[in-house]
Image (cartoon, rainbow, N blue to C red):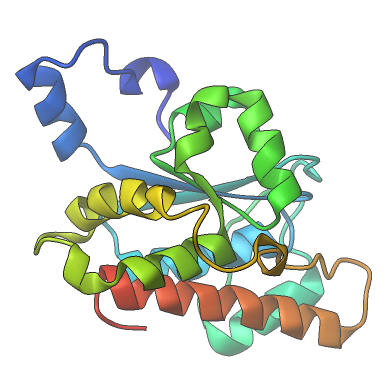
Length: 208
């Protein structure tokens, strides 16, 4: 669960607040539309790659509030990640979720725009998942100083943002919504998410 924005807000740039920012958990928020297909899978896979020191949560721009992961996607997730989604319930995206996150990962450019509309201050740390993967691939692991995954994430987010307008075609950055479609659509969405997460992991933790 993401902590409240009140407890997370840094009120100054004093050494004390800088130290607090460096030591508190790094929070990643995954966003899709219904919060029952793409973003829960992205959250599970990112959590596995980034480790227990990074908090990963998800929410939806038009969430099916309280619903579990859609059965077709849950089936795929359990085939490839035995723990599955766990005790998951979809939730509606709110501004406080965004403000509490150090990195916001959406599944489409449109969702990135909606997130920025809800909390404009997060725009520089909001990416689609595939966008983040390609930008971090351009940054490369050698650009990050040795450190914990949290420390490397804090370095990586601004470096990725600085390359946002210079790398590849943003039309390639969406993960298509499989909801209500055939199994092949779910497989494509899962594979797109898994591939992007692997690429993020290669840069941040040196493995996929």
